[in-house]
Image (cartoon, rainbow, N blue to C red):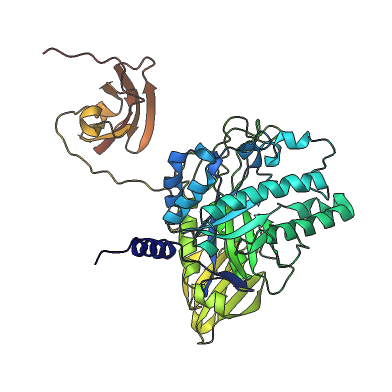
Length: 528
């Protein structure tokens, strides 16, 4: 009997359904609940237009390697609709592809539609044609603006639905955001602002995306919108509904650069302190703004005077490289907090004031298992804490210690276990001299030469001359660990270095650091 074509269609449909299994995302006051499992989430902002398509997989993978659970991004209206009703989702504007890559890496996603985004982006992400529409007033109870905002929001949601990007469709997106930090300016709009934010919530809910909606910096966010916190520290923030989870949508990991100003920097230790204090005080989601800042290509930089670089002192730098020690320190923090995830999301919390701004926070689950945070927010004085049977601990000023089982220190925000990584190189012993090209094979720019000289008569060698013929571009000389001089070749050719040195009786260690700054462009064949 021949097989029916309907069998193939049914099997294909079943296979497609298996690939798109819906993920249920709900929440309570202590967790984000994903398919019934209570979770805490580490997320990081990566704006897809601020890097190239080719960079996306590497950035996403490094974010995962750093211990993140999710990637967050705004959507940029001005780039997607530069001319009214003419859309562009090509190249690095292909947000669907970006979120698909996030899912392929095994991460969740957070979609922040806005469509006003700020983000130090040109005109906050608004297209200029919007500004020029007759009778329009932006971000208020204005029918012209609301119509355009709804059309664009619906466009983005529809594209996400068509690509099955929402968790309710089996996709990676577990949260979505409407508007952006409107609470910071709402007072300027009076009653019209209050009406507008209610309309935003209603419009968003009508999109029926199947995952929770959030509003950042919106203390009066209409239910069931979850209001969230942005800033350097959000440990004291509380959502406006006691049944809502406490979420940190923008933990400012650094800051943006302006022309003529110093490069902003936030230490790895203070970044970790902020995150740990947030989870100590009941937080369930922390998003780093930014995890990878990237580049303001073209004319996308907002203003005035914001630079092309949007590095942000993020854990991944402008080019996607690891920014150490920040990346590594935060990775260790994520692993430490995850040790207590089940207790943090299912346990009860008690706080004990130990004096001098030191607090012990204990989470205990129904089985009696414990997980503790020991914080010292005194920024001048370290704390010696005796927890009796649970041990004694030194907690540096302005730091938090994480105690697994409340009796084992697994992390402290001020103690970096590893500094800037470096590779160990093998020491090569050689009687005759070898050139840098022969030794490094052009995989490094620096080479140390070391030799030892035994002196018996200091009357002769107390005023010696160190003479070095070198083909390197620069050389630094050290005698017995003391730097004695430096020289470089102005035109990149061979040169001789001479320096008067004083040698001591017995063994003397002479060390030379040679460096090349790019091999010679013109290469000639030597005839021997």
